[in-house]
Length: 323
Image (cartoon, rainbow, N blue to C red; front, side, top):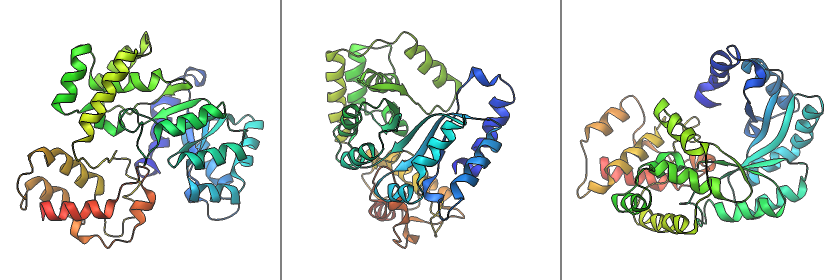
C-alpha cells in the first residue's frame, strides 16, 4: 500500500532493471488487512512478484501482526501459504512484522515456530514504553531464538532531532556522532539483532548511516547509560510520538492529514505560549483537506496506528491550538 501502491514499481524501475538480481536483496510484506476472501493472498503475492519484476523475495513478512491481524492470518492459513511459497523457491526467508504487546508476540511465536525472523520496533526512547514494549518484545524473540530485524531505530526521525539538553549530553561523549548515529548504535548493539533498517531521506543520510555502521563496535556501558539519560530528557517534552508511517491517513473519511498536523504541533510545541489560530503553516496544510475539527471520531485511525497514539485526542489538541 506504500506510496499509493507505486513503491513496488519504483523498486523495479530503479533497482531490478538496472542491477543483477544476486547483487541486492528484496523484502516485501503480505498485507494481512487486505485479506477478505479465499484466494486473496495468492493473487496479491503474484501481483507483488510481477510489480517488483522478480522471481523471488529474499525476505517475506506477514505485515503488522497483532491480535486482530493475527486472527485474520490464522483464518486464511497465511503462515502455511508463505511456507509453501518458500518450498517453491519464491521466498527465501519468512517472518512477520509486529506492533503489539509482548504477550501477543509470545503466543504467535509459540504457535508458529517455523517463523525465521521477527521485525520489531526498537529504539532507546521506546525501550521501556508500555505502548511499544521494545525491550519486552526483544526478550520474547530471544526466548524463542528468533533473530530480530529492527525497524524505527530513529523513531521516524524523532531521535534525529533532539532537545538541546539531550543533544549536548551525547555530544560530550562523541562530538562527531550525530543523534541518528547514536540511535542506530543502540539498536545494533542489542543481542539477537541481525539487521537495522533505517528510513533515509537523502544521500547525506545514506552516506552517514553506512559509514557509521561500516566498522561498528557495540556501544559501551557508559554510552548506553548516556542514552538512558537522553531518553529521560526527551520524555519530558510533550511530543505526539507520530512516525509519519501514514497508516492512519488512507481510510480517513474526512481526508485529514493527521501526520502533517502532528509534525507541525511537535515543531511549534516548544514555543507554544499562546494559541496559534491563523497560523500560516496550518492554513497551508489544511487547504483542500480536512481540518482537525472535522474529525468525526470514527476511530479507524487509532485502529491502524502502530504507535498506539490516541489520535482523536491529539486532533482535539490540534484544534484547540491552531483553530
